[in-house]
Length: 103
Image (cartoon, rainbow, N blue to C red; front, side, top):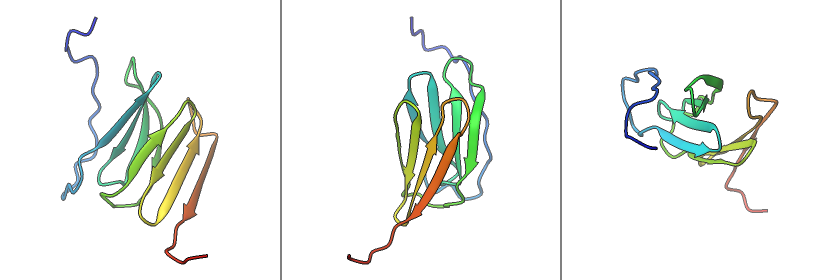
């Protein structure tokens, strides 16, 4: 039963200039958080709050959007797409640059 009690929490880096609120996405037993204006992407265990994996995006952008499915996480900015595969740890990752050239 959801009582509203605090079960776990994570303290993250304190940025001098917060431009965007953290984005949080829950899928199954995993919580994905995009933190510190798009700098960090982290995966936590939903039940215990343990850090499963993290990646420094270095994007420093408030326009990044998150999407995730069972074992895939994507972060999309205006200029790049970041992809991560893996539940407990990252088994594969990639980055693709986007440009505004028409083909």
